[in-house]
Image (cartoon, rainbow, N blue to C red; front, top):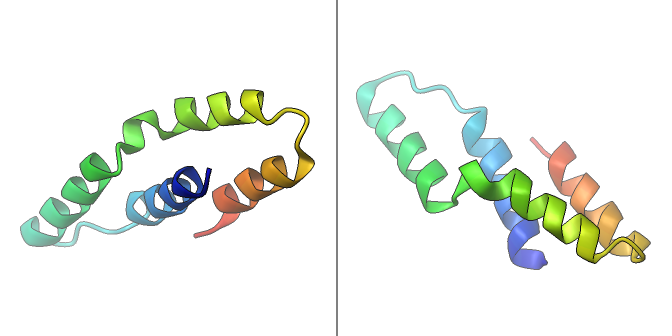
Length: 68
């Protein structure tokens, strides 16, 4: 679950970055692809379902989404 939390935080970070030039946009796109940000919501939903009876895990997932 720690890896998923890290992905959520990093996807939020990179998703909010400004691609102010071609190199920066390339860096952002690469990070988003490497982190598989297009799948992070589905992965989070599965983790929430798996941890439905674990308030600590659910709280950690919620906190990760609120960063950045």
